[in-house]
Image (cartoon, rainbow, N blue to C red; front, side):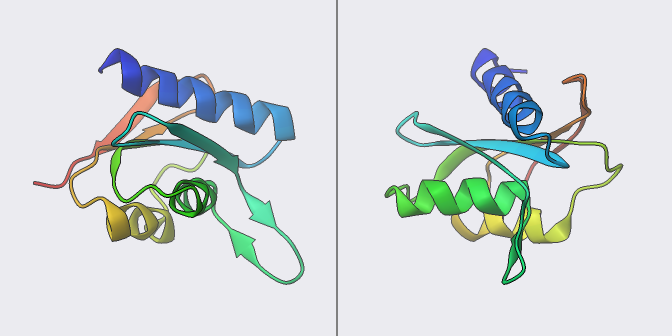
Length: 110
């Protein structure tokens, strides 16, 4: 794994730990800027961590992503999270890591 992608996993782990959230996520845009987020659960709406990270990137002007990472105890990718990334980045790898930061799966679009 690329060192820059390893940093995304670290950012996602840190966000998750800081907020004691179910998930932590981080994305990197094509300018090299990173955005981290956690699961958001309010009475009026809910976002997965990746949806929140993508929303932060887009609201900051990002038009494309180089890579995304999620840290979760779930054994599979959440499809809503994958769709959020794919809405702006068809080919960006998406890493799914466990709570220790060990990458369990990588989604790549060809």
